[in-house]
Amino acid sequence: MTGLPLLPVAGAATGSGRPRLPEWFKVRPPSGEQYGAIKQALRERGLSTVCEEARCPNLSECWSGGKSGRGTATLMVMGGVCTRGCRFCSVPTGKPGPLDPEEPRKASETIGIMGVGYVVITSVDRDDLPDRGAAHFAAVIAQCKQDHPDLLVEVLTPDFAGNPGATATILAAKPDVVAHNIESVRRLTPLVRDRRAAYDQSLDVLRNYKRDGAKHTKTSIMVGFGEREEEVEETLRDLREAGVDIVTIGQYLRPTQEARHLPVTEFVHPTQFAKYQAMAQRMGFLYVASGPLVRSSYKAGELFLEGLIRGANPVAP
Image (cartoon, helix red, strand yellow):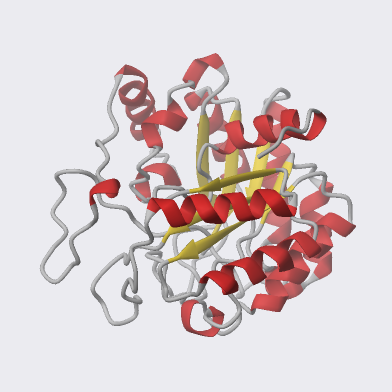
């Protein structure tokens, strides 16, 4: 599964044995008229978003655009069971059910309900399928683009086992931004991710997307696993070499106290996140978001649009 783990909100119990979160992690639960209206509409139709399921701290901020066309939402397709078992992720691992042929329509309906102008479509890994689900994923993109011509679509894809044909299938559906997460530094990748999710394989996926015509590519790094600053710098350099345009850097938080989930080694201070941001900006990324609360799809629409503006009118970081 792509993305970052659950984040507790202010006032939520962390449970026995959980480390106390630093002061800079306190955020308010999502609320507001627009949030309530969207949530009710989704529940009435049996639809869900990753934003809610992951208890994202930025949910209200992203959804606040709503019917104005400036909001952002993240949908997860291809089911809720992943064939991989990354040690940072809360999504269940096991044998997934069959793909829902109606999912492209349902996903497009979700977008219509929410009234957002920018959507991120992500998924679990589907190593059980011959094409790892690439054609189904592409069908969701195409349906959303067809039904909502002004919609900007960002996709956060699995690595599809490194199959370049799968990445070409995704690009043929014409998403506006193509993302795949590197997740961690090279040394820690075998510890953090499933054995089938290799560091160099992820770099190749990002490189293939750019080589095959993706206008904007994006990735995310989690910190707090015990990585060193120079390793984060090395990863950023590798990403730039692969042609990545946008990068987000956020704090890892342990989803549960189960042994399969890695403990947090360090709560990285906001000043270090600022240092990482400056480092990435100097390397020439189109846009960078770096901070404790930053998630893969953090303010995705804003990052994309502001990144375009910066690309057209470069400013000093």
